[in-house]
Image (cartoon, rainbow, N blue to C red; front, top):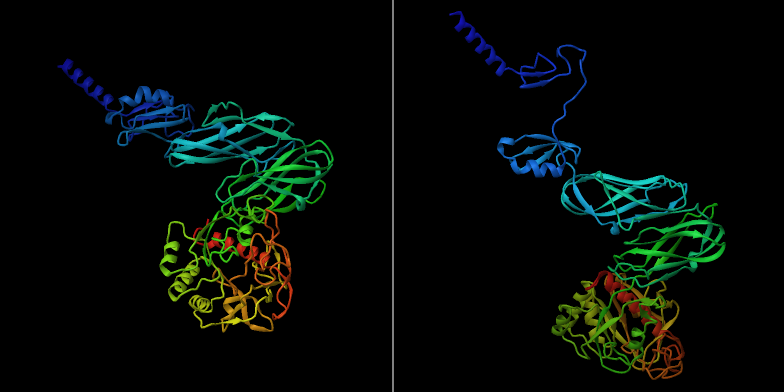
Length: 596
């Protein structure tokens, strides 16, 4: 009987051990745990007996994915390891069928980068602390979201570092900021490390450390801007600034500009000679719009000399489409047809409107469409609503504007189109202006011919433009007299000229809101390509250019008729024409039908 009782007691004792809590380094495990690893034999004691922690199984990411991942299932849900690649604990989430990191929701990322695409920004000078202008621009491709660190080190006292979190996969550009200061004047190889893994670049990315800055002054007033600048086109090696400098103390130089509308310039090096010399600033970026950019040039010149000045960059206006309406004639009543006229020759000249650095207006040129001497609302609408609507509608002698066409033209102008109305058709001019301005103007004729009209407005760019300030100068009509407008709402326009002695009889104006210029003479730019000179054709051909292929405007100094309102004198039709078209293509570019 005692024998059986002993067996029962042993079984009870063993059962209690099998189902009790397990304690490591303690015989008093917490009752709420299955396993209690303790730093104290007596958990209630204030003095730890040991300080050791726990080490669980360790795997690299590759070992984990090769040896463990294929066998993971619901039974292994929450299995934990230490990932030595990530330096972090991982646990298996069976619902999402992936390893989760305890270093954050995403764990370490996986990404690659092309060494050749890394850009080194800023100038590096011996003994000078790196600043926010010194950094690496690094395009990366992320294949796994998560945390990242990237550093690039040198053996010359400075390095680059960036860290963060990629929330999604894809392509990004990260900026690794520089820190420290270069110790020696030399070329340094960058040693890259991404997420703890060394990345070898072949060829190596290098940084050139310059000597301490020299003393020099810049001559921005004589700087030369080189290359062609177009909206949306990245700058190339031809886009530079040649900058004259005068060096008084040898040393390195670093010259940069600010970034304006997407473009900037910079240059660095070491002066080996004193005196006046040229350095080159190279451009980067792509212009986002056509207005001229004024960039501030900043140097690191020492000695308290001036370190700032500015330079302007002209952006070439893209090709503009001109719709010409008027009598086809060699005299140039409308430029789309009159390919042998002075006006057309002037427009097509690279010296006037071209892509060269010496072109008066930076323009990529024109395409021309002619409607001849007649127009209708239907033909106008067809052109305006086509896949390539006109940027500029130019109307000359002797096209008339009926009521329906006046409505179409006015709507075109109100929607941003440019209308250049050189007309002596009284009824048509009246219809269009009334439709445009909602007023009741009257249009009359100054009967005699060979008149000159002084330009009174010297501030608007159609008068004071790239072809000169014509304020106080005059334009002349041809042999048929001029039309003038009265009873017009003067608050909507800027008056350019009036009939001599009558300021209420307006012979030319530009609208303040809409891109419309009116000149009351259809033959304003009449002139044949085979006739030149100031005295030739003193009344019928007021538009004169030189007799060379560059078609530069020239002054007509003996224009008019003895019996005209203000006699014989000087006129500037070709200059005014150049300013008007320079204004027109600019307005078309910034707010017209084909703006960029």
